[in-house]
Length: 601
Ligand SMILES: Cc1ncc(C[n+]2csc(CCOP(=O)(O)OP(=O)(O)O)c2C)c(N)n1
Image (cartoon, rainbow, N blue to C red; front, side):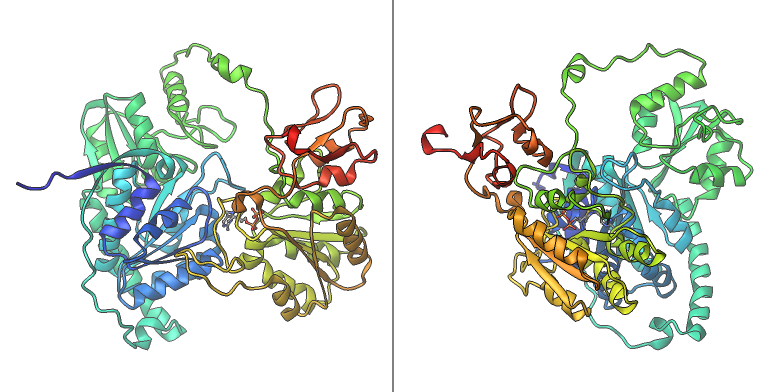
């Protein structure tokens, strides 16, 4: 009797990891970034068969995986949407050279910016780089499309983009799992300069080949089983892809649908065939109107996105073009289209009753001490992306800008050189420093800048869930490795003033920051203290406030520590939340705070 197929409930990211395993992938790299992170975190369970690594950044991850594919391995690289900007340089030229083993770039977009600095639409990159793109709309497809992507990649010797988004990556649905099939290709890089070296002479030939490949891929998308027409009522035909397919089916269950699982190259013939079979075409897509614009360029009359001002577009479009779509946004769109009024929505009672919880640094976070010390100075702090982004908010309010990873250092230099009168401090995290901070530091030294750079080194990539990086001394596969020193890199970049501080020692932190701000040369302060959440232990003894001594000056509340409750008559420390960092005790002017006695605990 044949064995029963095993079905598992999996998130899209888990399913992609499973797909990589089943497809015989032997190399996987990436850089963490929500919503893509769990792909590699799940691949690591297959480390016996798949070499996997966190690379210092997405460009490096991309290049390493592409090289593995050049040697014939099946390889994947993972990143969030903004990561593809970092890897865009190798992407654009790898498209010319192509690959030997299957190579899939897994990129996860974040419409609605649940945890990102922008909500760019990665689909542009498929067209920009002229590479095929697949878009699954649930976990089962996430696995299947990853495998299909590797096959397409091998057949056409091209990189393939597998684009997901927060909902597809993080929602769970049923996935049927299979056995692993090993890749029969021998791993060997075959020397062939006209094939792999993009000097202009060869690159021009590659460009022509790439166009030929695009033509062949165009035929492929038109007949691909990943692009499906579902005929139902023909008065309305919806063209859609990714998670929008699920919303479309929910809101218009009777409409005919052209579901594009392989939307680029655009399957023009299929689009025209579908449009000819329905009375009206509606395009539902998240973020940019890429499909809609293209479909209209084919001479097909369609509606889709509303105007930028959020009004019905002249062609009748009413699908929001900003933010994340959902069943309820699409229901509203349908009501608009049909001129109906939806009953006004009231948030459920339990939501109304929830207290507002602004994002704050965790109790015991070592970043807090640095922000508190910086608050004393009238300086500009060019910040970066990481947990320390939370230093922007009250009561710390000590971060003045965030652009993209690494910019915390280079922008400090730019402001300084522009003639900004105030001293400029650049602040980045340890993972960010390794990702793209080092070149900024070189710029400061090389171009005679004098910014003060603070690396808040909590020994982990905390914001994305505690991934390892070149400074932690551990690889993704759990091997011990050299922990690269930020201080040594600073010195190697030519910084003469390199100081390490303990951010839990407020007095010394303030003293060092004072000294370094007054120096007439660039300096690097490494604020070293492991993230207590990563270490899973308290920093020190739990504190309490003696209300008889407390004068209610509220100084302790200036730390913005969620363990200190300031809503009562006098502040109190929640002993279950206190991490024992002792910052509050150090700054209390009346010595009202001290470690709890055993019997108080
Ligand atoms: C190009 C790019 N890649 C990935 C991310 C996702 N991301 C945001 S912050 C961050 C790193 C945070 O680690 P670290 O700098 O060590 O600061 P921490 O959160 O530990 O304080 C990452 C990977 C991003 N925003 N941009």
